[in-house]
Image (cartoon, rainbow, N blue to C red; front, side):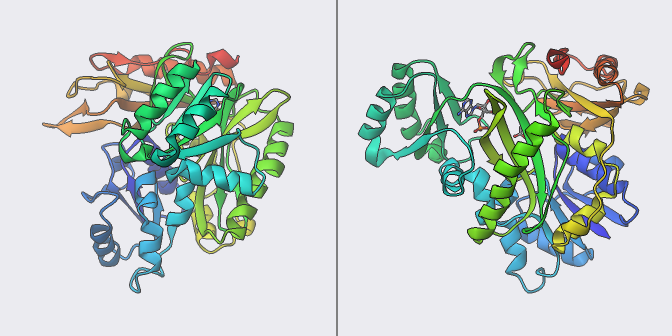
Length: 424
Ligand code: AMP
Ligand code: GLY
């Protein structure tokens, strides 16, 4: 098969590796890719949202399947673009339709979906400029902390957890006043859920589904989960606190109603569903959010644990035969640690040379924000590399990923040394 993978982060580097391991992969192209994906296929200089550019490339290079990494092309409708084009419609796109991607693209849409299909989640109300006064009085009747969410995509920054009614009312007005641009034209106000978070990944062909390895990511910049939110500073799979009986509940109460709900609503969905869950008191799972793609950096621990043929899984998804697909998962635990540019998620400097990757024997190194400049590998993004270690002994995996994180060098390198250690 000739495969086109879309995206350019650490997640896509992990996808590229997994695809290249498949017996069935003839050629792999990544648009636009990064220096890490170039180790597994050929990068092409087309943006993941340049549908016209992608169309031309797909047709000229006899691409058999398109696998979408990030949310932007999905929310912009790449699935529908292919289906509605006579020359492209026979080429499957792994990812939901534009309507399905709204599970991530609109908080109000996803909350309404969950309520409609009795999927457990926090109670909520939605407000716009039109009923701002109602929103203010709704907030006055809540018990803090109060969760405010901009409806649309806000680069992962559109959720505020306010510790007082006054703060929530001020931030609510700010959001409707454009703090997050048009993403905040509608605001969801939500009940606060306490508990520990974890992420369940489901692959759906629209009818059948497969549950991929469960993971937990670490969103805050500082050790001990302190400081600003980031895209994710590390991840583990499986999180040791997730028991088989918890997963059984998730399957019955969340996954099956989600797949059935998509069917009932006639929402075409052939792709990954990322279900962010809160383990609330009594091990009751409640949905925090849906994403229409795999997580980053969770993919860097989820995919390396899959030992069966990944392209086979993708093809079964496209053909709606996932019930016949083989999915085997390694007993090994995986831990990934993100090496970030010092200063991230605020201002940081780029262009520092990265050294030591060639010394890493005991871990996988995925590129996220790197670039080749004048023949040298340098940092070019906030999250620079993800180092993933696998081991049957969970603690050994933690140690190996830390050793690898220490070995790789660049100026102002920052990483959390506590990823996974809190779960010991
Ligand atoms: P979201 O973009 O909806 O995933 O929210 C971002 C983060 O905010 C989540 O990963 C949670 O840590 C936190 N969060 C969102 N909603 C809630 C809630 N209802 N209760 C507690 N924490 C929440
Ligand atoms: N790791 C969080 C995300 O991918 O959204």
